[in-house]
Amino acid sequence: MAWEWDETLFAGSARHYSVGRLPYPPELADVIRTALDLDGTGRLLDVGCGPGSLTLLLAPLFEAAVGVDPDRGMLAEAQRRAEAAGTTVEWRCLRAEALPADLGTFRVATFAQSFHWMDRPLVARRVRDMLTPDGAWVHVGATTHQGVPGDDSLPYPRPPWPEINELVARYLGPVRRAGQGSLPSGTPSGEGEIMLAAGFTGPTRITVEQGMVVERSVDEVVAAVFSLSSSAPHLFADQLAAFEADLRELLTAAARDGRFAERRQDVGVVIWHP
Image 1 (cartoon, helix red, strand yellow):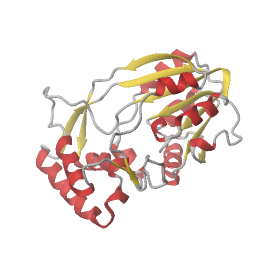
Image 2: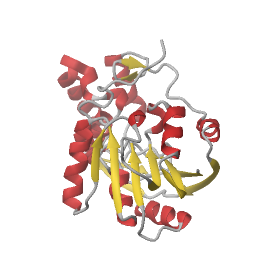
Image 3: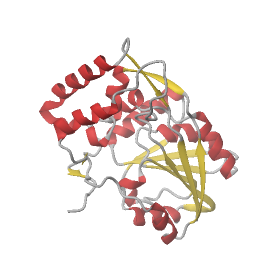
Image 4: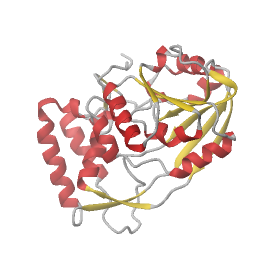
C-alpha cells in the first residue's frame, strides 16, 4: 500500500528541533529578499512550517506572516520561539491539503523540507491560487540535522552517522519508518513536473553556499536524531529509554571531550512563479 500521512509523523520531535537542527543561515533571507525584490510589503505563507525555523527567519521581510502545520506540538514550539524572538506570526493548525482555509492571498509561499509529505499536485494547485499576480513559491531544500560527509580534517570528530543509522535500524528495522507507515523507497521526487502541471513557470535555482564548521555536543546530536520522522521518539515505544542509552554510549565513545564537528551543508532555493 502507498504511504499515507498521519498525525504521528513527527510526534514528540518538536522539542528536539531547536537543539538538534542547525539553523538556516541569515544569508538565506538576504538571497530570497534580493531574488524576489521584497520591500517589506505583502504577506508570507510558510506551509509545513514545523517549529517555525524558516518562518521566523523570513517574517521580518513582510508585513505579516502565517505558518501552517498539522502538528500541534510543532506549532507550540514555533510560538515559543516567536515569543523569544519578539516576532509576531499567525500560526494555524491544519494540513496543506485544507488550504486555502480563508487565509487570503500572499506575496510568497515557502516550503522547507515539507512538500514531499503532502498531496503535491493538490497543494500546488491550491497554493498557486493563493498567490498574488507578482507572487512566488519558494522551495527551500536543506539537510539541517547533519553536516557534509567527508574525511577532511576538522577540530573534532564527525558524528558517526553510519553507526547511528545502524543503531536506529537495529531498533526499528531496516525499512525507513514514517508515522504509522514506512517509506521503503524514500520520499517522492519529480517536483518540477508537478509544478509545471499546476501552472507555475520557472524555476530559478539558487545555492546558498555555507561550508562553515560548527561544533556539536552529544546532547545536540541526540536531539538531531529524535528530530527526524524516521527516528521520532514515539516510534521506539517502550524501548525509547534503551535506545537513547545505547545512542549516548555510541556518541560518547566517538566524541572527543564530548564534542563533534561538522561542516554545514549548502541550502538550495528553487523559485517558481504563478
